[in-house]
Length: 198
Image (tube, one colour):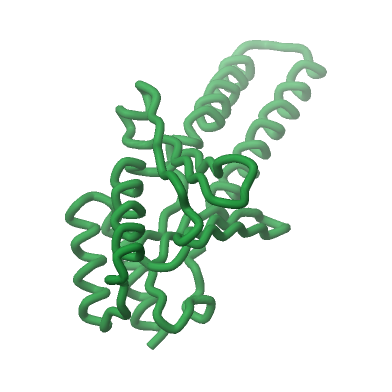
């Protein structure tokens, strides 16, 4: 769910708006597929009725688990604006955390071997006044997101952050898509949000 335009400050613009990489759903999808295939195989041979009902219950539990994880994935977003980093998550209970760019002291990322293959990883943001780093798991293209936050920090610290006109914001979004920070779908959503908020 994108950050609503009404929650942006007067001189604030969305730079990056991401959802966790679909890779985070790989394990529950693989487990669900394995259980459904096993249940299908068991249904093709004669098994006792009690065991058949147990398999139906297991399939229902696994599919419910997949639905819950998918709902959590859809409800989580990481938004970077020209003034802050916002993490929002939660299906029934929404939670949000904001880190002003002025308080960020370090931005780093980590990718395991498999995560490098799927172009995902962890993004760690350390900020003043917090006991530890905020870790965002499953971030698509974390190196590109880190570079973008670092660029914003440099602009802010040098005093060059300014309110961009609508065409400049659209050009910047298109540049982010060309560099691989945003996908085409994320670009379209960001454009719709910008044009809808005007």
